[in-house]
Image (cartoon, rainbow, N blue to C red; front, side, top):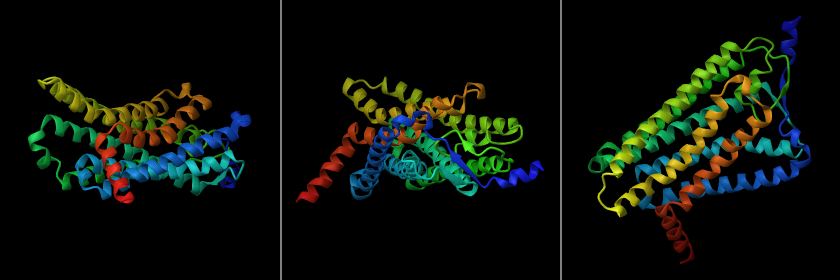
Length: 309
């Protein structure tokens, strides 16, 4: 009989921000504004990098890939979240939930490894400047991006398959999208094995890239400190500041959600952190790289100048 009950569940319902019911209109306006800025910012970055030959370098190739990945990543989650805030359909089919989870994991992990590739690029640029063009050739850059995407796809297929093989008895997802743990909580059976798998994968896709970025920056800083002139040191630090800012925010938020013990999970706390890495972090990327990066600012001015003339 229990087995029959499992087959009755064909869709889930998002509880979303129901605990903030009185403020849902304000949340909608704020998130819509942030989402619009995120889309516009990432589209501008990709376009500027494509049309300005001064930005046809490995660093900006990785940045354009990161902006493209961030754009798709937000498209998977935010439109549905915004419609839920407006009181529209908050249900999602099992197939729709699995699809959303698949793309969310794929692009989330791709972003992690793209940030690692950018860290490696900065390491080569500062620690091995004379060999930079040889080491970071076009083929290597494409392979690094392909590797990041492949890891994202493999992990997403593994996670989604393991989660959606579970029998489900409950239908209310205590979240605003189909994240791994909130969906697993709806299962009728013990999910300890799935929890362990999720933790192992989280360690591999968060701690390993974080460790590689950390090693890159230890080597970068030690090289920068050997530069004789203060101006040279300042310039070298400036080329890394934007990347390091995005890395710290991105990995910190993801680590809080996926590496903390299960017993410490609180719905409101998880949603707050999830908002940070699904809404704020994708916006941080274009903001940091346009406001803090002189080359991108000059490229924007050149593009505006051409339009006006």
